[in-house]
Image (cartoon, rainbow, N blue to C red; front, top):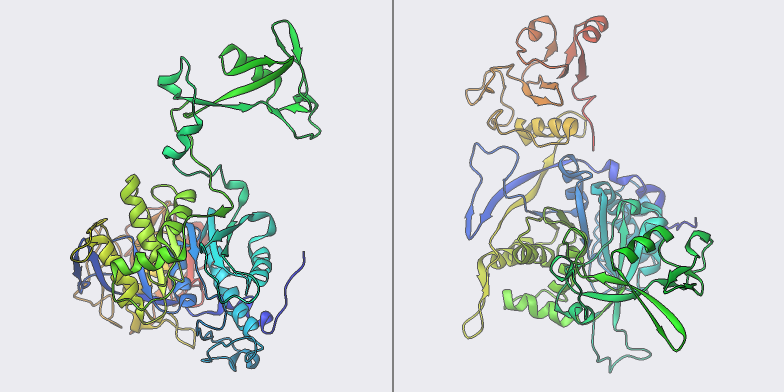
Length: 558
């Protein structure tokens, strides 16, 4: 497969692995119009399920890995198009002089910045690697782009996701006219790359049907109550694959009806359809036609959806601007994507409880699309937005608040609020210091939560310990809340019959020995114990199904 090479590629292929893991600092919860700060006893984060994160999206994506790796159903991103008009800055701290010289520089136009494509590719590659990790095995990703970086993006997507997982390159007709100042052609479109993580796990995609498709379902029979009306579709196909089992005669009124090439169905299925009155066979001017009944509803009563075409029309950029101005009239944000465009994509690929991620969140269109879709179909989809710019609070989060509450100005219709909630975060400190040791300044509970995530890929139970002060000794803490079973002070929890212990104190060296084992009360098939040292013999830990992990050496680094 052809691959793309550019300045700095060899330094960014694995840069996502070198990005330091930072904790998320929970700033507030917004719940149906009420904003509350986190309480002192709150541990790793909020409970809303929806997240808005302010910070560099490369670092923020890394911070999501412990909880969300392999769990995101749908990703939509609208990255900088690199036209020279966005004023985006390359800030990734890659340890290479060829790339470091770009740090903090606004990326310019082709004529005054000959390395602009290299910078853009170095920015996008590690982010796409992390997005690939976050996608579920049956997850899908949409990426908006125009012709400036179309070819380059196509090649790195093939490299990261695999060419076979490209479902389609969607053409979005973004404008309905204009272009008086265009010198050559009037550009009316952009592109949306549509990839699966594993295309073999993707079933048929369709939107819920609406009245627009009912005009095709003109007929009805005795199954109208169970199957609804039907339309006629030809049983013969123009395909000429090597499928001899699909070329056979249908016997009707004593005659043999042969396809010009072949039938779509097997002989057994056709015979069953004849018995069930699912075929309509007619003869006109001496020529037979065979059609099958395509009912509105399946045998299980599920209504047939409508297809989305590879060219999207009727949703324009101007609508995105009017969407946002209706919510935030004094906004200065330019060219937001139309809410209907994003909602259509999300509806196409998600279930009602899916997770949706947008790591170039901009004005927050994706969150509005999720909230509106939930309101329409009763879903409980959750969104995660990441925005690095200063408007993350004043525009991104503010838009979501107003969508939840409802909005509208005097003299114009008021939009009904969707209801809902979200938690707002800032990127905090790194979990590990430069010397590789744990950074106690982040708080012991965030460290505990991280350890639990890395081991179980599940959130740490709130039934454990309350948050402790930074650097405080767990053993002597008056704020400690023991689990219900009065197990060891350092007990994290039990998962899949494995008990986990994080035997750590910032004030003293911890040692896994017989004295410490006497404090363990939990009964489990296996025990995983993190500590500074271990004095138990290999034979003893093997016999008693104990796994010792040294702090910090054996802590998984995302």
